[in-house]
Length: 126
Image (cartoon, rainbow, N blue to C red):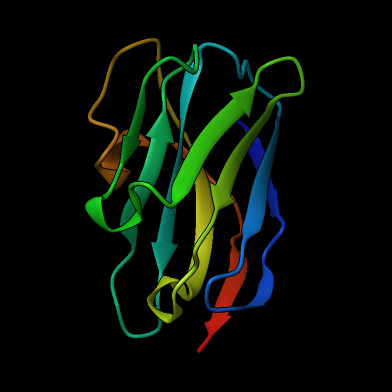
């Protein structure tokens, strides 16, 4: 079982930036994919971004391409989500998730992830 702890959320004006961090412990981090999902009030949880174990392959939902960047530091067991040009519609609770090993799994699907963090609130004001 892996424990995930997100940090870095907060309140920001439209056009601003935030960097989310996800610290992992309890299981091998470096050989597993990591993902970020979000859930806005009254909506279902949705995929935001994911990164394969090596960091070489990344995935984004269309609405954040060009604005968000996912990365990881395997030496620190930490994944990051740099969010720039934030919009009010980005407001949500953001969750990091521990994904499948190596190159397996459909990272766009929440069912590919075995462990989840508690979430961090991101609020973008207009």
